[in-house]
Length: 383
Image 1 (cartoon, rainbow, N blue to C red):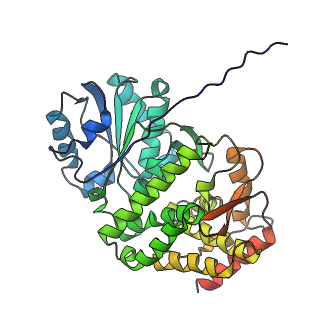
Image 2: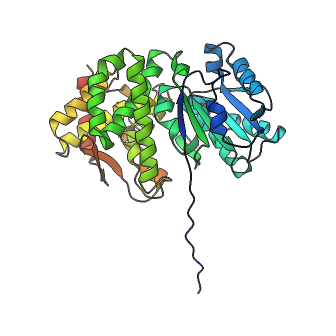
Image 3: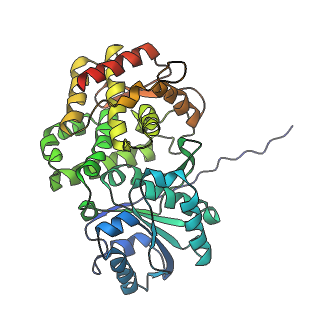
């Protein structure tokens, strides 16, 4: 036997721009983000609910690109697509985007510009990543959650077989543009949703940021713009730093620290048929894992209390009735989330828990009875 072996290294530059009024004619952020000799073809995919909340947005986008036609050429009016988690449960939207990419001859040097929340970015991103084996993608996230977390990541995915993110790719976007003004139409529930990812990343990577979130909790609960901007920027920065420096940006191993609290969350979303939002589910997942870690003696009680209190001060509930759903054997259905979480990466089960605020640790097993006890404790806390 003989073997030819070579190490292949691929470099990526992931840029996240922060601006306001991205489609104002004088704002050159989008033009700078394209960073290319023009004009290049652009297909804009726009979340329908955002267009309804901001009348005339599609015309402002078209006018902007017409004014900067030397840089980018809009091939057709913005394509309206549905957003929200249910949009990820069907491949129809992906097929619709494929058809437009094919019809307008969008190639690897062209751009898909996705404007919407995290689910829309996932759907459009998956289509862009798989058409021609990769069309350049520019994300313009329009929710707190996507600006702080999912929009700055390197994943795209849709759901299949009743499982979240079953089909997807690791494909860094060409650029991300966070426009704070695009959050203005969000309802309180959606504005709050992204906060939990800041709590998550502070818990596992930055104790000072956690302290800052505690100090800003009252302002954040009232959606004070300055506090929200700081949360979004620092959260995005920490996520990007982890992706760039963890040594495993494409999750080839069995650990994914940025999914602290998510083994519960993904299953809870599924059990609620996505009535529970991702942010709400992650808050419950963090609360459960924090309570579990305290109960097994891994995390001290004071730190656990601080985390639970912060989540509540930000407006999150820490219990949902779906945690008590059982299967035909009377086993709590949420417990199957552990195996689904392991299977998604393969290899050994690896869950991130907390040893202290700012310091996540990996464990490879969880005691089911202790999980059940933690669930009932949170149930009592929610009464």
